[in-house]
Length: 174
Image (cartoon, rainbow, N blue to C red; front, side):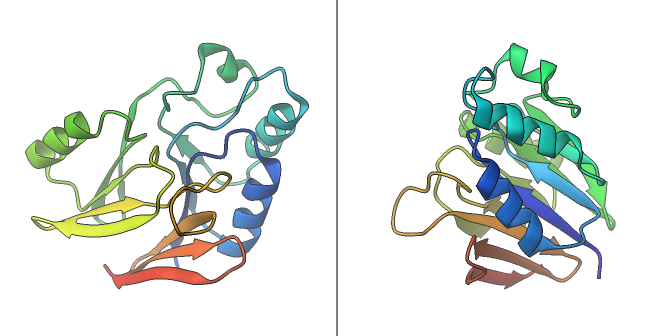
């Protein structure tokens, strides 16, 4: 079954990327909602950038509020755009980091995507509003609130938010 892996707010944590990657398995695409590295000069950030750059599937990234111009020097995938839009399985997906959420919501009301994907809050959520699914996979490295570190898997039929231990936090039909 075709699926997408979605992750956010790794902040240089290689282990969270590796764990999420192993749990989402074979995906066609990875979406990263931004805040990828910490300071690019740290060893942890370099290792994460190397691993992400070796991905055999495309990694689409929306630039987060902690991502810097120099981060691009370490990553093979572009990180300059605050928004990413794509069509997948006849569905329109719009992604932004989420630090300018009201802007992103206004944009989504105009262009009417099937799904809006954000990060930034470090809190996982899955909400439907006016026919649009708003998905935040939570933070893979530094969660806030009651939920543990998490990521999301989107298939043609389902949207799931999963912990790094493989436990399902949220699941909804798409």
